[in-house]
Amino acid sequence: MAPIENVGRASSANSYAIDVHGLVKRFGTKTVVDHVSMKVAEGEIVGFLGPNGSGKTTTIRMMCGLLTPDEGGGTVLGYDLETESLRIKNEVGYMTQRFSFYEDLTIGENLAFVARLYRLKPVEEHVARTLADLGLTSRRNQLAGTLSGGWKQRLALAACIMHSPKLLLLDEPTAGVDPKARREFWDEIHRLANGGLTVLVSTHYMDEAERCHRISYISYGRMLATGTVEEVVRDAGLTTFVIRGPRLDRIEADLAGKPGIDQVAPFGATLHVVGADRAAIERTLGSLKKEHGITIEPGETSLEDVFIQFMGKAKDNMG
Image (cartoon, rainbow, N blue to C red; front, side, top):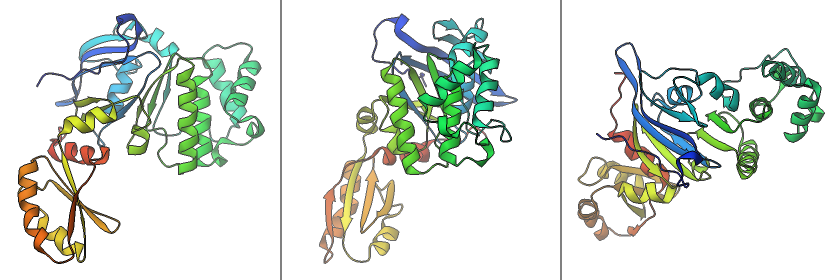
């Protein structure tokens, strides 16, 4: 299977913040990342999607110089992955899945520690500016361990951007925070991107993926799809129908596993039926049209439908 490349909006090779090809990473006998290639243009926000264990975190860690690829290579911010990993680390902001700051230090103390790691001077000036930029000034003396999920997220983002990186690598940054905090976080990401910052963000939330300029879907080490949300949904080639009527639970059970039916799931007072073979799904649904009170109408395939379809077809490489 030939690797799928992400092609950004820019045409010049020098305008790619990420330009990697054929990345492979093995742990023992398991190939966790299998010839992944990706191009991300400067100023883009690219969503990185895939099930747990699909290789997203490992790919991100190779891109920021924390892991060395077993095969493949390329550049990040124009620096070679193999020979210039330290320079990449200095110009990338990496936000991990888990909160990784000292909970018994205040917000201000945590940021001062990060400023010293990056040798930013004067420290207090950098801390004060970062606090103001992220709306944290009034909380600078609050212990990090007492923050809610949303405020911890904001502290983590502040620490990632205080050294003025050119690229943000965000690994499921909004897991466990409420919808309002997620909305505010994404507003901030778009503000940063409008200023020229490039962002690669892994997420499980479909609404977040739809806020990205483009998305890439990886499944158990292999890149399966890339493009805008509209392109990925279109290229998946799925057909969706919406069923309304009584006893949808019975209809759901009857349809499961029938020819052409790849997915069947209740959505409120309706049933969504999805399949890759339009003719087969229409034949299977044909018999339902005769039942009293049942209506069947074409529906719009969602990114979530595509996500589930990919997951159903993928083979776990850790088994």
